[in-house]
Length: 138
Image (cartoon, rainbow, N blue to C red; front, side):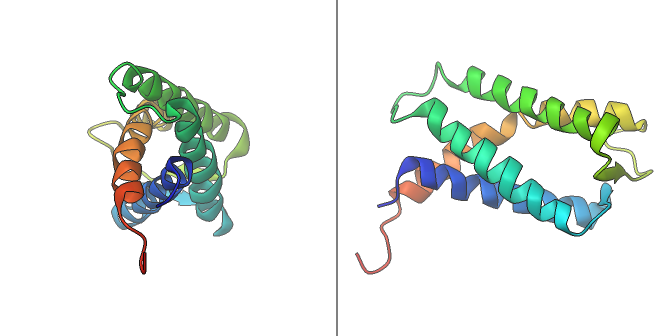
């Protein structure tokens, strides 16, 4: 059986990969370098979100009180990431395609940044499924 922290890492990698695939399919943003999506998925989603979530929840079984904290941490991380890109990194740029009617780049960054709050919640859900799955050959 996998540790919950490693399961959170794997779940966050899966979420990050799905986000990038959907964004590419919908042409929501473009990266300046083909290396940036990989960095985003492995570093931001996997290591920061995944292991961060694993650290915050620890071995807790009851997560009701932790979910608001996870959402806030995810949203703050998302706003920080999107803001750093908008004002300094410029690793990716938004397409002209609106997101739910939102057209301005800064508004898209704020919206998506807050939406990042859902990533840790989904990470916990998926990680518990991964951790509960018996290993092959066990």
